[in-house]
Length: 278
Image 1 (tube, helix red, strand yellow):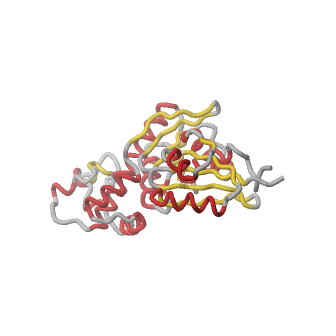
Image 2: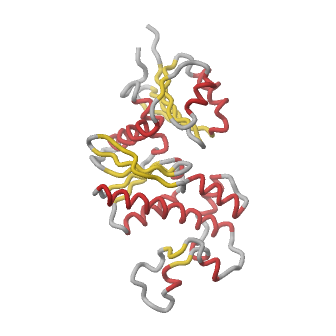
């Protein structure tokens, strides 16, 4: 009997991600959603005998490009199942936690022993980083944005607590942000692209951390898991959410390979683990 290769696909607004088994090893690939047609051709050529499960906001569009019937899965279910798999693989026991999925925007979920539910979200996410970066600096390449943001200083753009309590000891850490981009009003001289990009990362990271902490408090949990393409290779954003989460007494974790959770969850819906199913 011919073996059928299972392939999980997460067709999102910015990226399309794939997950599949090869000799019992999990493999993941991602491409820009703008190249969706090329991705469909790649699947037909490389996975000519595949069983597909597709999730994500662009799943129907991608299915139409494939030209044949595939399974579909609700995006939130796929993501939550994929996250739980990745956490177990890392040997971490988290029976109940808040999941913050920062893709183009950010979706917040409560995962617990009886299941999972979406509890909120914000329009602030990776799309915000790209949009504001383009408006303020003219730079729209995500990798370049990340590299330049590493070189920037937020205290040249953001109003810090130490700026307000100048000459006095503040009641909270002085390097915390009092007002994102608020320092520009007091010092209107031209800021560098690096400083502006660092402050955009700070704005997004602080917002994502804040809504996640509020959700954790609402559901009586301490652990918050951060995933999504916005964190991929982006230590600047990861550092912001970790520090701001820890300050509020919660326990953060930026999950390795978390951006593939949707594709992995779709894959797991067909087979728990293995190279193929008959």
